[in-house]
Length: 472
Image (cartoon, rainbow, N blue to C red):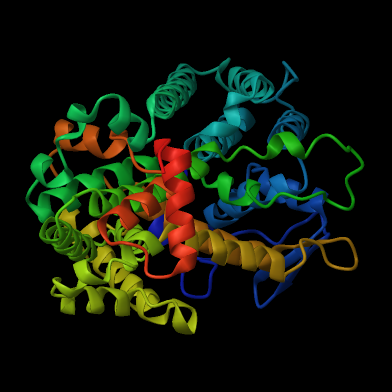
């Protein structure tokens, strides 16, 4: 059976690793190559190129790239139906008199294609139509051979486990968001319940950075590669079905991850604005600077950026008397690392260093690479916007999709890293569920700590006091 190489081996520096499986020159035509690189083709020819036969198995980079990008042109279930049809027709799997030897040669290849699909894009199979087609084709393959029957069973059980884990994760997320309240509401109703701050929960910045990394890796792990493409799905000009593309926009895990980034930024700002005493606020800022530095050392750039964003929010940055008590040298270094100028040049250099370290890692700690996620999405967005999906002759612009797949496959390698740190339930619970201030409540807390400096701030303070506290 063809073996599945790891994600990191899929794309070489040119974007397309041609040495994994030798692709035969395509017989159905409609595909255009340059220097052995597939540049474009009709959708029909690209689908044909996905389907194995006795003498051919598609390159794994092609499988990943086509399954990732095809959803810009058709539903995964439509593609699955076509693949099933081609397998059954071409290999005469429906013909009871077909040569058993022929089936023995082709069955492992079809099974391998289905395994790659279910392992890499399991969420496609939440659609019952996908699951039906999968089971139907798998049943045809397995009908003659005990070995294949076992393999098919294994593949379907593994898929069901993944989908069950996803449902459980979604339930946890829903529970967290349904119980989340604004900190100010809690303060007004049960002031004694917020005696704790983050330092009393965890005074060690390194431990805190480790627990943040747990949350990051868990949330990253649930993002399907297809969500990056589905976030930008638009109407395919050659597609007449008006309704079909809207339901493809399934990006809930990606959105939950972005929401976590925002929550962490607001949590940082809340913890800094909460203390009444200036020295406590300064201590809190220094604590978060240390946590951010530990995140940087771990390779957790997403938490690092969320912490910096929280500290740069206006209600925090305006606390001049507090900042005057802070040793800011370490913060300046971190800000320099995440400086947005020259398209985040410093950060991208640090990310490349972390990615390199990950490739040659001897321990799981060195494997951790958690990118600044909003920038990754932005990069993919501009790649998608900058090139057309189809060429003027109607062909699919496959050159664009090699590049897209290269970016997403790197992310796939990073999200599969197991978190090597011990979980601390108490700290995780606090990070995920403690109430945080809304933007208005942050401004109010900020003005209460260090009074307004001008008429605009004074007016805002007055209106916030009356609207949030019900007093003038």
